[in-house]
Image (cartoon, rainbow, N blue to C red):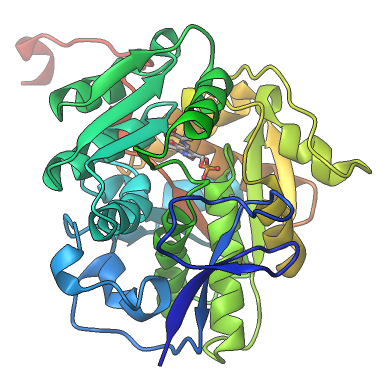
Length: 386
Ligand code: F0G
């Protein structure tokens, strides 16, 4: 029988899943969810929960809070292939999830766990998408959500979502990193809130399903995605470890984590000789990944090392140029998501990725998440067209 524990990736200490604390009592590292005797089997549910046996085998179905997230489409486009110089480039669109970003995959699992543990208040810090997802799933579960956001620094559309879903908004003077520090501080004082940031390892379990879905459909050589707080980077390596150890894949694709130049502490960490990450003051046009002190950097390092992965960084201009191509292809995405393609182009130009390679790029958020970048357009008269 599979059963789950919280396990320290550093010292191996195991804790019950019934406690509301996600750091190791012994060494302080952020815990993993670990499933003893995990088996690869899918069940007759849609999307994320199809993989229940690999993400939360023990939760009763009656506790699951779901909006049918996951099972997103994978697109190909000639325009994008030509731009990247890669014939087999596939874009998995996580913007198609119920609140418009990949966060829903982690949120369905974390909020279900909050329901299992009988919490009635949730808390998160966010650059926008986490707060939208947290607010929606908490409301669905009948819980009060509290979101800490740098109000001046997030897209008004994402704030619109959180407010509409009824979240209590805490407007933080500062940036995402200030808000995240406030959440951690709140945790020192009270355990009344269920924290929904990706330091909660159940979020990571849900986000693993992006990789399960990709590996069911494609045999990519590289999987690229934008990297901010490094929840996805952590989740994707863990998913590949699952699939490899269960014999579902016979090779490991290389993970490609892309950071914005102005918010690239993980790039510095992985390319330097440091034991811990050096926080930076983050600045980039891609507000979703404007993060200077990512909490999951140790788990993310494990993912990159396991997959012989790559950490690259790109400029805001490169992000916006890739975004224009994705938008004009008819697929569309928010700025941060376009980093996944911009990074591939950079690695193609430097020869790391070859034109014959198969690449899966993950578009993390929907085009409408951030409409502050209206492209130039001209209007026509009716008489101009007929
Ligand atoms: N792309 C989008 C659209 C995001 O919203 C985020 C993170 C990322 C990429 C980076 O993913 O943190 O797993 O490395 N958004 C956060 C938020 C942190 O609060 O919504 P990551």
